[in-house]
Length: 289
Image (tube, rainbow, N blue to C red; front, side, top):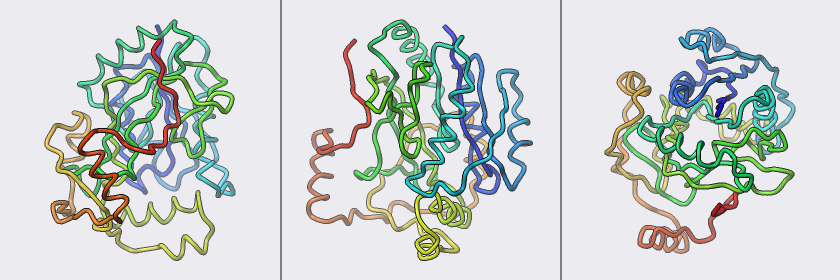
């Protein structure tokens, strides 16, 4: 069995992406790792070249900044990276530049890769998510955060990145997936408030016009504008240790209160009581192979 990882990255330093940690978090699962570097305004290339591993293969791309609808350019670039994986590989592990997989889940993932390698009913593996917010000590718990997503797919080039690269589809149908008891740790909302404001403004250009982007532009990101958080009391991936130790801003998530409307409060209460998320969007089909 052969496994290839892949990711896309642009302006990693400018937006303080933990892309090095993201790659390192899945390298033990991979025989090779493709990094597609977009046209950057910083030393992203040097950052990636600084990762000590003979598994890493670097390629380059120029993003089409005119694609300002639904984050489409992210899917375009993801497909470019996936297409660089040759047919000798059975599986592809996609990790985004602000994600990491805890080493405690590696064995479960390896076992699933082996179990379903030759099963034609399975297109991919579904992983669970923890979304960190404001700091490394709090996770989002409201319905706005997706709970599961596909991050491991068969090396089948009919599979394409969907919409803004959050998930995948095959011939525009949902992938058949098997859940794995493993979490992806999403750190996209954990940055210095100054950098987060810059990233929030610039990345909205991938979805909206200049007038809208100007209307939301802020110098410092307001992390208190959130509806529900929970204290995280477990461990982070080992590769994140140094980054967490260097955190240089303060955020107290204990002061956040759940302030949604009546309907959302009821749905939030129901989910907490039963574990069931009513009306949940699922860009996948869970199968029992």
